[in-house]
Length: 273
Image (cartoon, rainbow, N blue to C red; front, top):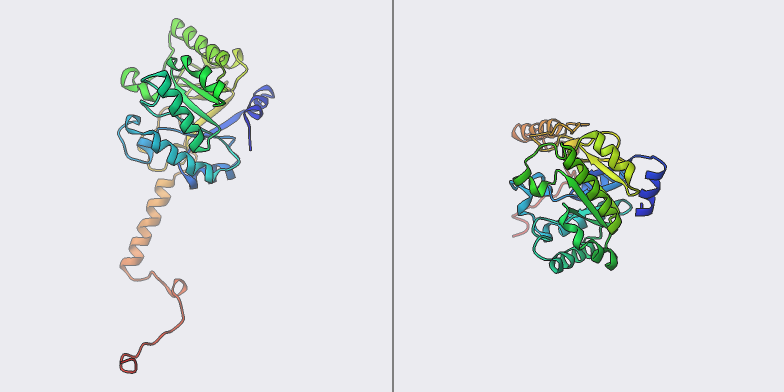
């Protein structure tokens, strides 16, 4: 299994780190078979696989349930799991308790938290043995305030984000995801710290990249952000396959002889009476 130390070594060797956001056993199994280095069980599962309008409705139990499925599908991959909305926003004590529960029950290698307010309890989690991944820039749990747009676009905001990454590293975070920030800032951030910086919509100069399984394969997604590249089209292949199944059931060409058990069993009601 890939470890945190392995990810540090990859950065030192300038080997790009691949991360894929996946939410269940089959997608995790595919990710591991394809050689993905890390899997993120994101709270975006609320919209992508549960049909919610936002991540706000996702619960801690949801995250544990899906992360356990991912771990079963990818037993040898480094797995990061999101702390959902509300699970670390009320008090430090509740945040630590929820993070420990998520880490313990999910089987993940690390927990991910968004924003700067996490700084106050990272040392407590690190002391307890819970690896922490930060998330800065566009943070999905805060899009109701920030909107889906580029972040840190001014010099002042860029310096603040750079400082935030340095603080997270100093407090013991093992990795930081930066989302929807200018590529030159992402490059500077990656150079400034020793921990891996994973980008999404942040250009090519980060230590690695993360995209969502369903976006990469165009699977049930209607909207693709600017920074997404689709490498497959499961929607077209899947719908066409199901259409063919419907047609063959309707015209009785399925099941065929090849998909039917051959043994003949005759039941004579008169002899059995």
